Image (cartoon, rainbow, N blue to C red; front, top):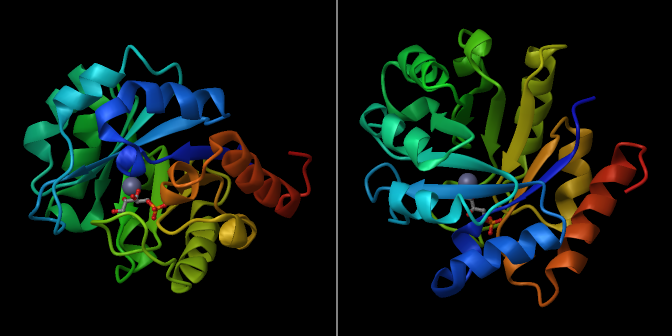
Length: 224
Ligand code: DX5
Ligand code: ZN
């Protein structure tokens, strides 16, 4: 089993105090920081770019997972790598040359992830598995935090888990993850849980992260 990781999405953080927010979720037990990049074209919202990644890199002690919801993505891979990304995830739907994008991320010395929207079949990643360290299944249509988990994502997690077999690839679920569905997501095969609102809307970040971890760990038959 791949290690369980909880990755708070800073999309739901207070941007006016972003550095403090990153420190606070790390102190509360975050395993990595999930950074949602949106371009107002691939998704109907605009968020942040490489300058913000560069600003939080020295503040964060954990890895920065950059989730690119932008099209095209290839022209910006360099900038995110230079800004301090540890892992860069691109969407299957973002362009016609997925193999090229993933190879470019690896060539920059970064870990590569591939993401897919809820309506995209898992089979679309079948031919790029040699080029990825992470598969991200979206459980909402990307663009906004705080949306409801789409239950069909569980079937897709199971299909992805079967497809990945024993390969050293993490399986991530992103969108609407809460204490209530974390166990199901883990039983379906996810080992990386992204949580935006479930963490940042909570008064106590540690309680929120602990609750998600506890639900997920017990579904794995582990102590939290
Ligand atoms: C959606 C983003 C997600 C999202 C997670 O476009 O990719 O990372 O912000 O936030 P919650 O957990 O609030 O759905
Ligand atoms: Zn995301």
